[in-house]
Length: 161
Image 1 (cartoon, rainbow, N blue to C red):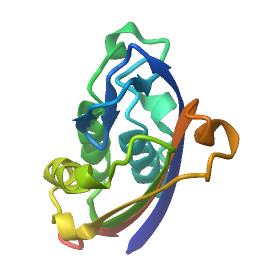
Image 2: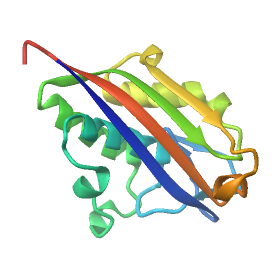
Image 3: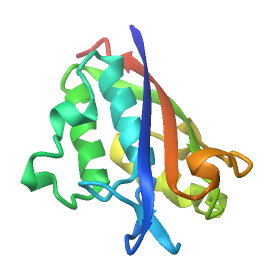
């Protein structure tokens, strides 16, 4: 049995924060503002994983009102989401994602992001697509005030589970 999930995440960009994306620290003058490390790509993937099995969203499982998640590495959140789906007998077939931001240019970090994600989800880097686009200087993204990531995942139930 297959299940499809879709996730999206938005964060404001501010000076004085580290810029984490896809589990990779990327040099930039701004970083995403959030309760955790604010890694929008990993958050979108988490929401897609959870949504595929009707398990709610990232805020349900890791609320920003819980101090134990303050500053948490989003790779930990992704690993916990993976545990939730694998406990139900599912594994990831593939991920297709898009990051919307004006700057910095991120594609030179895509392989490192794919490796970080693949290691957590126990899949091949070939099963992970990361794309990036600008908004041609339109909207809060184009003004470099924020970042958005979307992710779609395909899960398959292991018949032996």
